[in-house]
Length: 385
Image 1 (cartoon, rainbow, N blue to C red):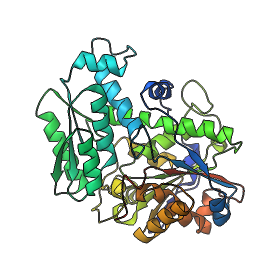
Image 2 (image 1 turned 30 degrees about the horizontal axis):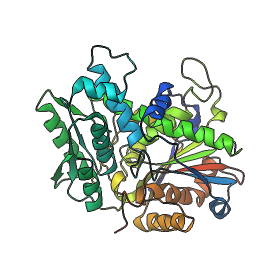
Image 3 (image 1 turned 60 degrees about the vertical axis):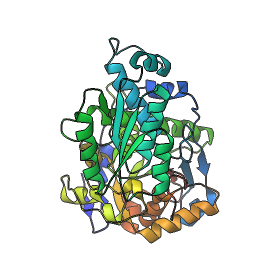
């Protein structure tokens, strides 16, 4: 087994494909299919990017519209709210519909969360489907369009002039102030793990769609999957899917051979690289974040449930600059793809990896590789200006 390799701006973990995780429940995708407005998001084949990057094929999973919202977060929020509310009923194992849950609770539960934009809007949208009030806390620094989107869902919005991690603590305190409040946070800490775990499970729908779409495209693979990282919940779901049992394996949730798994790459802004710093240190490290247009990735602490999964299961982590991210947004725009700064981080990060002989070799990238880039939001979710 080869030890991890570290530099100032990247990390390589050769044993990652030997790591085993547990997949999300098979019923998550069926749950989403029953919700109003469900449709798989597109997987765009981009031969121009494949030629530029020296690989076989590049696909972009374009999460520009998901349940009518401009980002991927609804798949996690809706599943977690469903599970959390079902647990508060006399029949937690029953397959409730949203209509039945709305009638059961009759507006008596208030959903509370902190967000840097997309998660809060998804929680507020889910609350609206259930006839429940929502209270969303945001850093004052996020864009006005993100704030307006949350308000447009009917939520109460509180702006806090503080970094994201402090806003999360404020939301936690607000939810704890009354028994009728339910905290729906997409990051975990000691004593608060169940709901963030359900959010991660909800993200599995994205990857099950990708499996089917690659099959339809007769693409094989994927050989590389690139995921933007904030607190780490989405890339935790990436690891759970590609190191888990639902893509072939035994009933314990363990896959067959390590060789069958893709290489998994994490991408963070250089000004808020909490995962890279933690990987380099070998333990969770909280970092002081700086300004970045990648608002959804501007997080200083890795989710506690994500950390052990990411330490074991991702092959590489890189950081990107603001300029590299901007160029990726514009490159995708020229190809007709609607991708905001967080979504375009995947392309920017893979460009960094593809330009490094050490990373390219360590990740097993070849001229025949099939690469999937997760584009997590539209330009509407997070405008450049």
